[in-house]
Image (cartoon, rainbow, N blue to C red; front, side, top):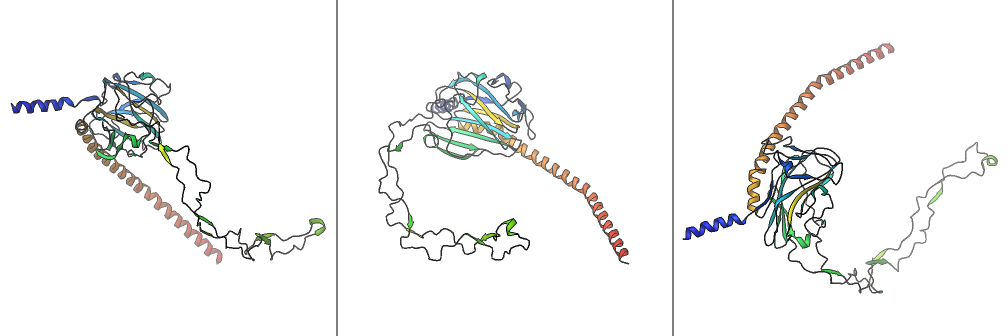
Length: 380
């Protein structure tokens, strides 16, 4: 009896975790993804494993192939879902083979009624259709290798961002995005008192300007002399040129002292914002229906792969172990071998050029010897 109960609970645990969307970009990926037609000059996606990989088929992803282009493509989930009362994990791998220097890229989750052919930068996304920017700075990796990006959205209105399985940021949806009006606002009826003195330093009333302070900024050059060929009738009255006065001290200003009436910086009082209302379901969206990639790039060459949307962090870890982990090790070895080969080529090239440099130096030395002999002969 107890054993049957344990088996039932184990099976229930398996059923409770669900994969809503998984894309590893095999040869039939275009049957699931729809390219936007909202612009007539979108860049072309190509299936590619990149320069460094482990398995030619498994490690294929979609790659941006044309410089200075927008890219927009999307895929619908097999069925829409609601995340009420549970976490959602969005995970994917990204590789920038081109040493990316300028561009913007977004992975967006949208409702099931999206017109995929019209998908663009302003297409409504899952929180009230608006684009809300995070207040924190989360840097993506910009080397040439594949990296795993994971976003965990929790029903307690918290989130976590992982890169390569390591937490890089976490926090509250309400605190880290401007999803709601501010809790507090400045009191519109409050004004700084007219007698509020917020100057920390003031002029010393007892400080006076020295009597010898006033000196002109420029004076006639005392060493200048009237040219001998100067003709006053023809050239006018001669005047010496002006030079900076070494005794000039600039504008006099009294020294500063602490203001005895200083009250500190006036802080505008705040009041509760009447437009603010707490929302315990900021995380909630009842129609998760599609995912899209929206990009602008100067240099093409980015590869997206291994997209997963699930309600289980364990499922996400398992998928990463099957896809990202083998690729990470294989491409690292392949890149190291490539870099070593390039190093050897450069070294061989330098060695080949060295005799030419030596010959050039010898020729210069011989020319110098010949010149020296000619000089000695001329002296004789």
